[in-house]
Image (cartoon, rainbow, N blue to C red; front, top):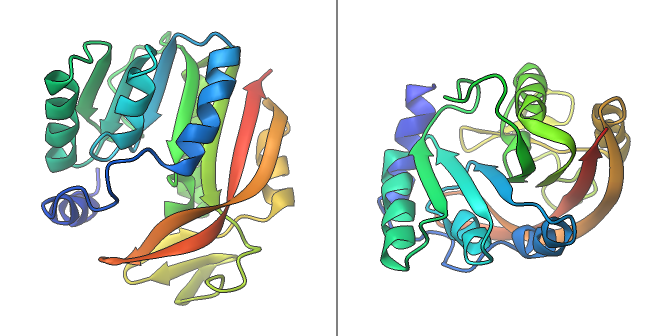
Length: 219
């Protein structure tokens, strides 16, 4: 786990509910897919202070959620306990070193703005790691930055193709064909569409950014 990244997010979350209390647009968009699929067990890595994980919990899914920030997890757990969401479990964890047995499988995995925060090598590891914990025919649903966003694509210093360092944070902008190539061997794409989601490229400065909303079923 990156101590620097963990410290960054702990400091951010000390400010409270920095993105508000409502679930993200992509979580709301994901719900009917999980419901129609009759998913029971969901995994929500990068859950922050729980606005999406608790949102799914309110619809009676059994949710396991994690984040690298102790501050965020404490807030998420306290909220779940306060409203009686015994079906939602939060823990502090590194996405690449999850405390699951190799046989652990979820019915669905939801990622909100996680994959675009890493380098190409790290993204590949994360993708395969999450996939390993999704059951056959399970749904992977995620949002990520789109290279079609003409306003913010190219901001900062380019580290790799389509990957930029913005305010000391990595931001990768995905092309449609890149997502298709990433998914094609392991998943069947159910939906891939653009939507607007608020991203903070720097603390306290949220902006509407074109993002991909992707629903994929594991083969």
